Length: 250
View 1 (cartoon, helix red, strand yellow):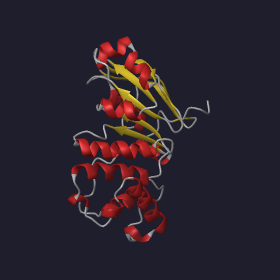
View 2 (cartoon, one colour):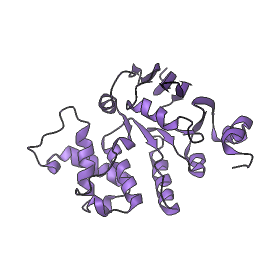
View 3 (cartoon, rainbow, N blue to C red):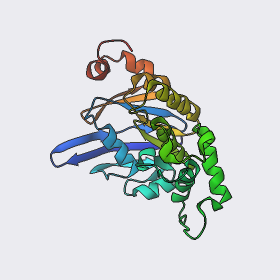
View 4 (cartoon, one colour):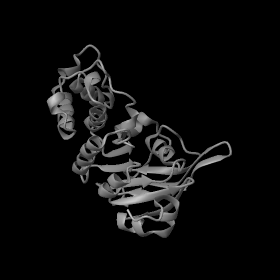
């Protein structure tokens, strides 16, 4: 189907007798921001790991851009444009903001590491980095050491590093975790600007942000898909309210 960029078919991940994801089937359309919500232990991060290639599934398939990527490792999926911001587990604090973004753009190239050349020597890579930093709202800090950034700005830099890799699909695992209200608002604004330009799968506990951003929402509980629908459908779904949202209206 041409209207689906990423699809999972009955994904299963188990650790011994523990079933973490249980026959998860979802589909994400080009340009869609699709959120995954559910209580702690629902299998959300495990699912993200299965999609990115950090975990291999016991059963099921991952189809991306019409190709079966189930057996591909993280780097192969990233080079196809399936990129997880959390893959960059930390920024390089001793590098500038621009150097961090250039390094991320360099890292997804098939033969990108040319240590005999200056990091900022490629105009194409610098241009890709600067475009990503502009989108992330960090162009006024390009020459600042990354270690001097505030926490929220570091998270913005991680997202800019993902964008510098020129992805087709972004997997975002709690990008607003630990942020102040002001910082979260900045990231929500940033993600609004990315909608339609990238397909995004968002795992996030901030329900206000989820309902503001998502085109569709999938609810997980005990590793299984409970329901997928538009935000208004999720608000009204009785089983979803009982499992996750409670009886209060969001």
